[in-house]
Image (cartoon, rainbow, N blue to C red; front, side, top):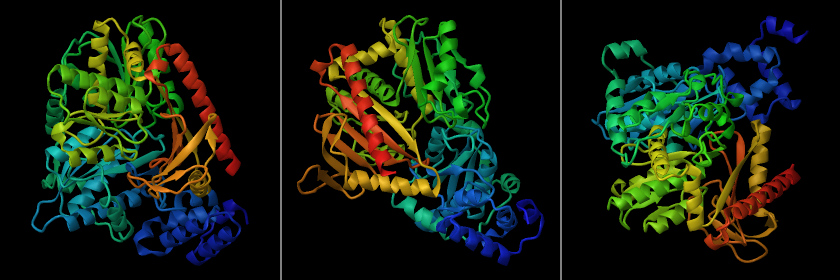
Length: 614
């Protein structure tokens, strides 16, 4: 019987289970996929998905079944994120989204004193099915006894963070997969602080998700009609803009700005905010203006402002039309990307700034303006992460403020520091992946406000007769040249996960002796809280957060390589950090060439080490 004939015939559960077992014996699906498929076929809570799963078995779609069942989709650095598929424990669908909302509701109720009012703010972006998933989450939260504040249009992640705080919500849900491909979606889960959920809550929520059997829901329109769901869009918009514009730092406003929302939500907040801050020469780049989950006019259909290629066409338009600055935010508008002319000649050569460079110039701008205004003291602090350029730390030292940098990757950790250390003395937060925050109004990175700040800086440097790149060069001359590079290595599926674990273990247990021609002096293993000398010596305790991160320090100070699995995508991320002292950086062209060559060598050596393991 052919596959087509099998698909047309009825396949009962017993036959399907036998075929599954045979597929596992043949190596067509993994053992974990086999276990998870059987659960979805035999447990009543998954009954509505049984027929399409049986159809896939009849058609012998083993690779698809393995992909969507080989694991249970976890909470990563930004919530529960993955590819959409109608069913599967490792896919985003109504069941996994519903489990996430139900698990959150169950856990929050356990943590909330009896008699307290329960509430949840919910927003969504332009991705496929985002509105559907947002309504599903709202109905589940209402059924669990929560009042829902619903942002009834495409809105940015920072607006959701703001709404949680503004409405004093018990928790929040943002339906978005941020900068991932069009195939993906996700939920980001927020605590009452407005920050994404931190330990121990994240692990306990996933325990509730895993234990979720029945998902109780109320019809969205019914709950809207009886007031259990409140549309809060206009109120949150107005108050968010009021709070955001209060973070402005003054100065000139004469600059011509081209802005791209990359087919996401960003224009809904960014354009009104820039207008409030006095920027009136702002144009939305029309090929990227349409809100669309297909992201049709960006390279590879991936709307990620970290990717310099998304700026290629906007730069051409900007050069031809006399713009001074190009900005782009990702689909949920929590990240900012920037391109600018290398000199004051807007018709000349342009280049993007990477996330570390944007963070450095904004750190300098914010601290210098605060110092000039007399509102900066040694009690103030900025926050970065372990994979953010050390240039920001040096800038903070120059202005006599603390730099809290001992954080894992993910802006939720920056938000946690703000709540731990106190928001009154918080000045600025930045991470290498294009996330930035100023002010006390939110607890997540904010693309629209970062757009406001970079526009202010662009106007100021233009008034001073400089370009943004020349402003950055001045920082290199003062603090030494710093160069960083991020390399992503994708490892899909169950086999990819096994290779990731093998690779991370190798960097911990048997690291390379040298990288880029420089000896590796020690390995910082954040999973096991140890510093391991390379070439002999006793391990030492590591004072830092616990997470799946390895940093290899090179013998030359200021040079190191960090390795970690992504918390949101199936890939390993390699971060290369190099620097020279200020006295070695006065010839910037020479310094730039030297460090670019060094980074090339680091990349080659790390790649060779990884390849030798396969």
